[in-house]
Image (cartoon, rainbow, N blue to C red; front, side, top):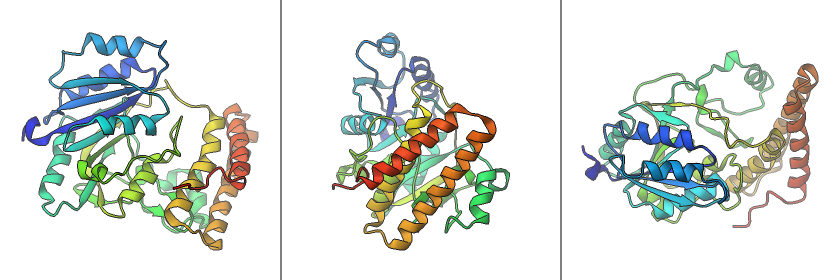
Length: 321
């Protein structure tokens, strides 16, 4: 199957990561099925020109079209801009610090091609360097002991508590399996999902947390979502363009509540109780870690979470439609 038949658009938001962008372009050029275009949406301020300059030097060096767009607002907004500009039948959301195995796109396109009824909306890959076991994680052992969650199946959403079960708990596997949500780090979507008008919600701006789960859960109302155990990739975790711990803590309350109440509205008293019980445990767990380790980032996260609780009570996570 060649690139013309596949018609894949890769959409990648970036922020102050010129080296990572160049590495991604090199990686994509080695795919057995090449994308038709790569759309880079740069969220850096106009005075930051390093990424633009780096892309300009290699603009015609790769076997696909490179389209460079400047647009800020955070990864969710940037992805929407890229999706609107994309021309492919399939839109791959690939982060700039992800590196794909050479047959990554090929294996995922095979799944779409075998889906004659066109019920599959998206397929996410498997990040080989991210897997961990629940029994090796102290916090996940406590989640199970205290029965804080109703399900522990990776890639599923706990509709009673409002918590997505980390896909990285999934051991290596062959073939595909159904999931409720997909990361935006290494996923391919059928264009028809976006043609229906679905986009990342405008609620998510600046540093993104949980916009991928929210988007996926809405898409799953109409489409089947899969994880492919043989479409492999690696996430490099670039230190550049990251948010501070306080902002992450804030969004781990506000964004999680926003997703929960939007997907399940109206929330029952039992669902609200389970959500806040889980949040209370997280506050206790991180606070204990901060005291034990004297870790400044933990103290900052606790402060952010406290601010997030007050923000939710004041209506910051309300869904406006």
